[in-house]
Length: 269
Image 1 (cartoon, rainbow, N blue to C red):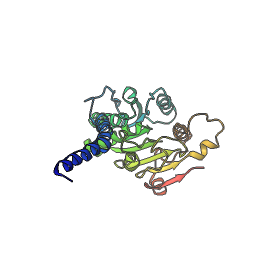
Image 2: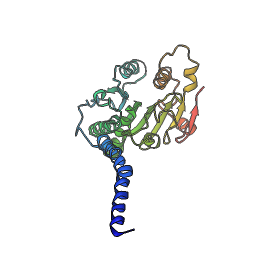
Image 3: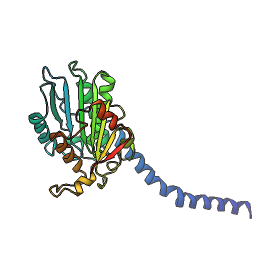
Image 4: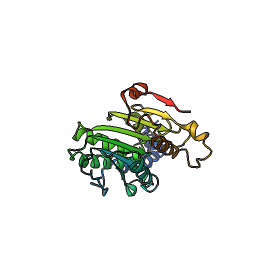
């Protein structure tokens, strides 16, 4: 083969290699990079979410956090009222977190939630009367709980933090599929989780590694009165158990913590 033919042949092979193998890969790569930037880039800088104000002579705060596309009206406002009327003593206060407008995008909600939690935790830690915080989050609201726990632990490590995860969404920023499963409960003094293994929300139907997980799926299947979804069932189970004083982890004793250690799970029937 002449030098000229070799040159033409080489250029032709290179051209078709680029056309067939290189160029088709560019759009997916650009889309992936764009999605990563969209999911992880820290914006907005701050969030318009009200920080609960601890009232005088109260040193324990219970915070209830709704999930993706929900609002406090979905369940947390009514549960907070029931707790206030039936369960809490004079040293305890309950409040809800409304982060609805930041919870709508599937790729952004977990990132937003974690950063909102950090913002709220930093503000709460400034209250020197605060001794104990119990954070209860559902679905993507679990990332608000996780961020709160991180921030409180960093700003005021003397505050006892109890985290409760109700069917927690595990996917972080649409990319990291097992983040919640591996990290929820890690920074808390006490952590428990409640799941329904029959729902279809990623990461919410498997045990949480750093909490004691209660699988309450069977109770929903055998409950003729409950008409909601599998994803919402852990909220209803938790609510009923707390109000009827049948939940050992609401205010767990040392004996309860020994019987239900972290990194294990219990099937409730």
